[in-house]
Length: 443
Image (cartoon, rainbow, N blue to C red):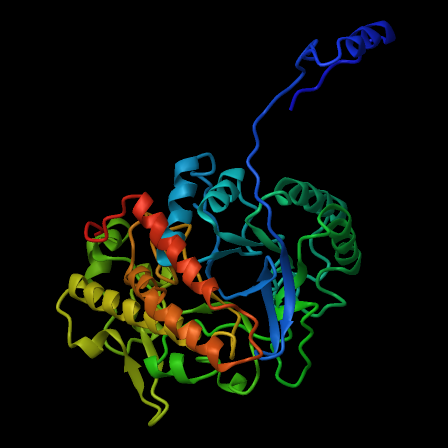
């Protein structure tokens, strides 16, 4: 962008007399290059799934993604452009097309959004409120303490991210409720006003989930879903057959846009050995372990049991010990890796098999981890993949796109054209070829 200083009238007259001669630039005040993308995004109500979905450039799109916290709990990678690119690339290689930046986290650095732009990853960005500490389950409905400072930050962030083509949706916060209290009314109104003024073309929704009560109506103009979860392991058949796996009371209630559904997770033995000492490793979880049976170090890192309840007889089913007894943490970890592969493959295959019948969107809780944790991640904080990474990658493949095409052909109410998913898959394959991906050299 070249900006020319003002000329006086005599100089302007002389330039006009030059006719077709090249106009002289007296002084360049500033210039820079900018990359941009053009697309339209619209939040719509899907009459078949009975809930919200999205259209991109006028076409319905099936969204699969993961919840993002941040690169590191201490923000040690905040200025690491390559780290951001590598983490977004992990999502791309799994086949995801959406990342939700969770409201309990932060607004990311520009490197994150630039990576999403480059890799074709949509972003659902939330402001920094969550029912965990904004009154719903803890804290106060009056928070944040300084409302003016909060809104000033909201304005800055809208201006910062509004031009990124990756931006699909902005949310007021995570799991907020009730609408008249959460957020505080003055903040809520000012959010709506700022979005209308500064980013009118960007869809905005106040809460990811509400009301989480089967006796209360769901307002799709306030929240994306009536409930979310569950967050543990499920018998594999439930992912394919149950409308909302693990949510017993919601089997007949539509959750078209699922903002959070999680499963069990643990890093490989190589990564476990980096943050657990030998004593803790020797005390790896035993069969059907309760919380009092788990080593304190495992609990500190938020271990979630690899078990579920067998609905037939009420017994506890231990996924890891279904492979037999384990003599070491290494053996336990190998079995856990296989369990994660199966759980996440079934989750994303199961949802895809009901795409545009029951669902428009499924977002994993969570796809990455900002610290050495033992819960919900497709790759760990050391950037080493888990079994879940490969399960998702397997599910989001040609087999899944055939599921989607079958669902589309069976429902005439679905407006998605046949080539949408084929083109998406072709782009992923083309990208992998251009990057020279060797599918046999990953550890």
